[in-house]
Length: 382
Ligand SMILES: *Cc1c(COP(=O)(O)O)cnc(C)c1O
Image 1 (cartoon, rainbow, N blue to C red):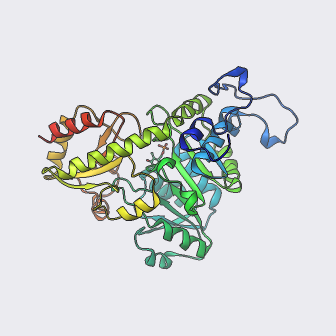
Image 2: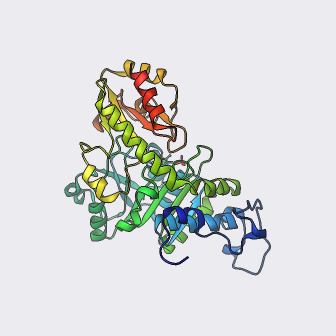
Image 3: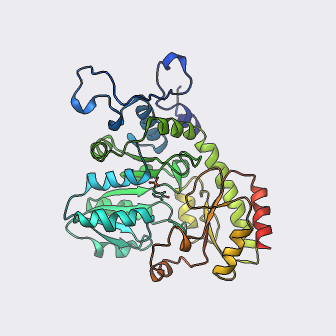
């Protein structure tokens, strides 16, 4: 191929094995824990935990092509990607700046394992760059943000994150799970390391747990050594499923972008809906930033009904298509009330402070016909 391949071509072909083994069009599953020794350096012997089977190597190249980075590494889960990255970049006494409303598992990792290792953090308001400098300490090493927050789908001042970190010599790390590389490639903006929970959009079929670390070859190989030590490898069969899922990533995400916008507009116009959070709506606080940075606004939205928790629960109970479940990014629409589920562990005052009311509903728009979803929502709203 000459010229620059597009997203779909990359998602199907980048890094594929040449020649194709036995002519197989899809990468076969290399279900072998160890490989014949050919005199290589000990760190490069073929061994499943070292993420160097042909399945892993193909996935690494494909993910790097999609993220627009020099290298990438598939991991056993999104949390394996995030923990290996923190452990590789930070040592006892180090400090990190984190966006103040993080994915719950990441907050928990910081409050437990990282705290026990003597690695501290300060939350920063991602919309207020002028306040960041006062949080910096001589031991600050990393700035950690998310491309879209959960569940309010806010967009941090990512351009300011990049320039602030450059000025101070910090490594920037972003969790890009909600956007996916179809809608946003943080490396193009100058962010150093990109994490994804591939459990969500990248795989897209709600059937495996996987993660991604993408960045420069130096950063990725440094993190891979830590991942090898903590054993956060992705199994070969899950590699196969993730590679299969990736082939439809661009087409799935563009369908979800369009469906989520249609649903957000429907909800916004409905008299029983008090507020809709979706970066594709013109009244979203960071709509202009999202338009400038992203190729699409994603498949995640949240909203509040007129009324309280009881009305929200009654509404959830009446839906027939979206399943009442946590997680996101799959073919099946999923709906959840964060205060009762994903954010149940966050103290109520803290939830209120970050704008997550008890009646807020989060919707992961799936791949069903959007008019069927709208009809289901309309019936449940009554
Ligand atoms: C799900 C999720 C994670 C964790 O990923 P796992 O694959 O469950 O380990 C991290 N960040 C975000 C934003 C997520 O949605």
